[in-house]
Length: 313
Image 1 (cartoon, rainbow, N blue to C red):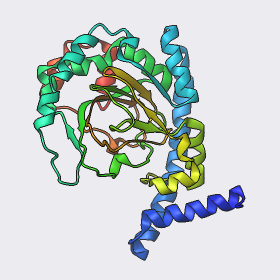
Image 2 (cartoon, rainbow, N blue to C red):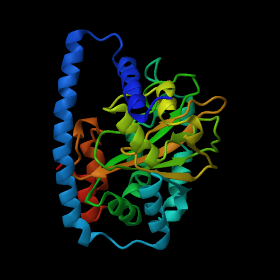
Image 3 (tube, rainbow, N blue to C red):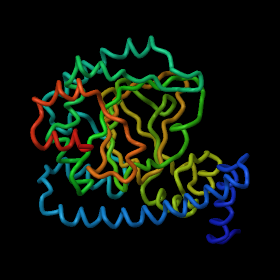
């Protein structure tokens, strides 16, 4: 039986060859240099993040017992499965109605590329239905997110997606960690009933994800099932299932995750995404909404919400 050290070396080599297959020698050298520079930079940025969190800790909002339960699960498991209603946002029922009205539109739409598997709401839809966007910056939601991040929040926006049952297993349907920031927060709300065969959000618990990151020497690659299975047995992979309205609260930067390939039914879901107001890698983030949309919601925002929405300014 391999020792843990030999297992790590074996898996790192398998992962390395899996990721870099077909690259030239110069590309390999350049990639190694870039990864080394990135490791040093991220260590420095992480220390800066921790200093900001320490300074901000006296200013964190007080949260309810139910909200604290979500935070506790995120710290231990990396995921909490609940419902949209658990955050007691007044507009929740209206948001679900507006999002559900999108389903026939998304169902009729085609992916922009033949190799794609996602159909996504056009930003113009939020101009007519601002409640979908504004739910994400409700004070109850921001209290939760800010307590988890530990620093002032940047809102990366909202998307309503259809995951197409086309059999493709690539991109975000493979195991990965998001790289935008040291800590992140995402709320995924199912708009139809989802079971394990129909594009369930799947994750590896926090402790096992940390071990997998170390073992693989992970650096922003997509990880195949074959490689991941050698690090974390498949019986420890967890699927988030539930009826319409199920909400998944997750830190996608610190747990390995993916969307399973749907077999018989496509998945419709809302995604709300957050990071710190000074994210580590801004280039990976949503480029933002149009000036017209920003102007249309500005009068509806409090000072706190403006700081969260216009974090780029």
